[in-house]
Image 1 (cartoon, rainbow, N blue to C red):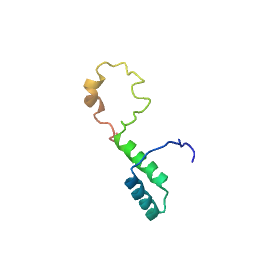
Image 2: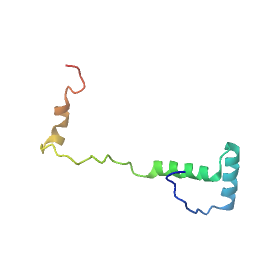
Image 3: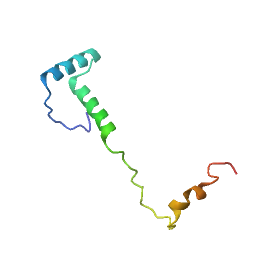
Image 4: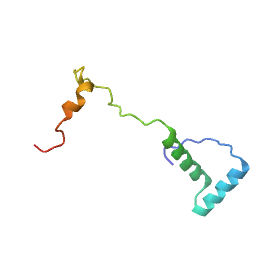
Length: 79
């Protein structure tokens, strides 16, 4: 389990019992199901990661945003 961090989570007894039952049915441990659930939750609720390069460079053209559509005309078409 490379890259994992140990933590303690307190669950309601009924939820834990149901979690263990789900795990038995899938042949998985409860910890595996908890990791899956946390990963799904984080993927759904965490803000999208922006590329590190975003905003790092300047075109030197102050009107680029206003003229973007005009400047992109013909892009992607064979010459």
